[in-house]
Length: 297
Image (cartoon, rainbow, N blue to C red):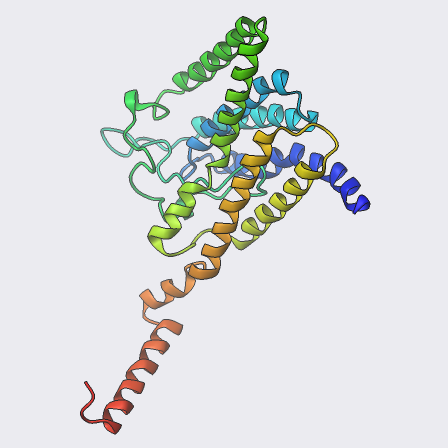
């Protein structure tokens, strides 16, 4: 047990620190090469930037493991680059009202995943405005890039001002620090929920690769083992939100096992494949039963 604890103590922090690059680097390069961010949800940078900024300002009050702080800082840098590329390569408006910049929110990608799958592959993608399509003041749906950067700047300055104003009051600052810590971690932890909901509605996991799911589950296992065996300080906010993420990933795994990847249903729709064969077998069985039992209805 001591060997695995020591191994996790070195491997898990390194994995967490590098996870932003593993998760989002390929997506950024792909959008840059194609010069298009069609199908990419701008809500993903929003959620990850808000969560990471809150975690950074949570550190002075919690003094958690520095690997988690470094990961949050790197995540902010990666998400800023990703947002810049996505905004610079957005599709032109498709109508008078323009194209919603994050149609098809799929919520599949998090800081611990290895791949960013596009919303165009999601059961919810390709139409409408995703979740919360109608937002007050068109929040995070602006056509101009400027409001995005203004919002992030105002948020950073607000958190910085609260840090300076509340730090001289230990009791108040302690409660505030815990609050922003739980809020930031909860925001990130709830990212899988839209995908779970989409899978339930579509009764399919089409477009959701099993390799991505496997990497999430492996990451959750490593993270949970490190969180509960680490000799460094890991606040309960990380543990509880990590457990919630692991439960959500397990639900996604169950959905993939039950629904599959949608390929069989697609073949049925096209008029072939196992689905048609099954229907033919059922028809033959009923015909045979009717010949044996003429009175059966």
